Image (tube, rainbow, N blue to C red; front, side, top):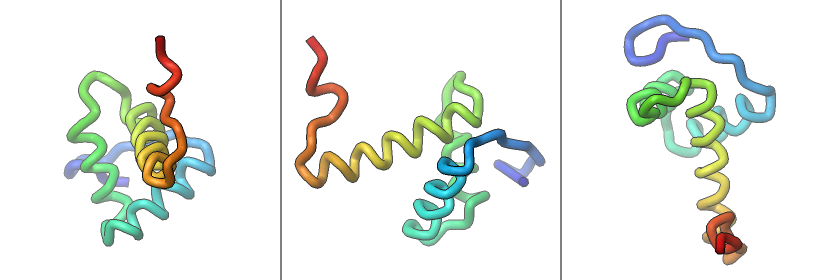
Length: 76
């Protein structure tokens, strides 16, 4: 796949690929466009890790919109 104009590979579990495709479709983006966006914001994290965190954050925001607690709610 091509991310930010250069070829790369990503090793992700099937479930993460599923949600990345769903999120890209919801946002009217291609998978490559979404991964390019994730790549641009990943700081020092590897791209695979950044993609997993992106999916978790995205789904966490969805859950929060439903009124469920976030992981930060349990911090002391």
